[in-house]
Image 1 (cartoon, rainbow, N blue to C red):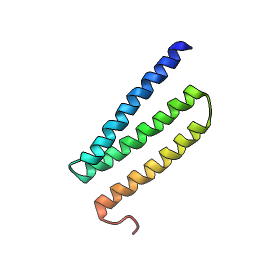
Image 2 (cartoon, rainbow, N blue to C red):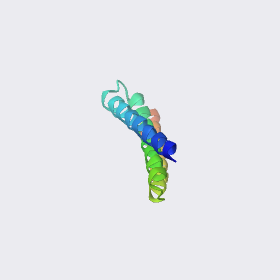
Image 3 (cartoon, rainbow, N blue to C red):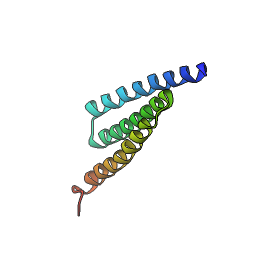
Image 4 (cartoon, rainbow, N blue to C red):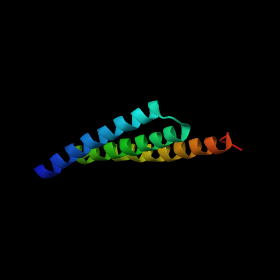
Amino acid sequence: MIVLYYALVAAQCLLALGVLFSVYRLVKGPSAPDRVLATDALYINGMLLLLTFGMLHGTVVYFEAALIVAGLGFVGTTALAKFLLRGEVIE
């Protein structure tokens, strides 16, 4: 049980580091596709961070929030990619 706790804490630290790297690429990205990929990585790392919080605290609220973040992240990344390709989201 104690090994699981330390593994989850280590995973949270590494995911937080991934969030910081994604934010850096989002701010500093040389081009728009780099920023879209950074946004996608930010959504994924945030979702996984919420899942580890849910496992650590044993509550389902974090799992539901992670599901919402995953859905919004997918829709947001798809809309941004379509905007970069065509210049408009809704045809």
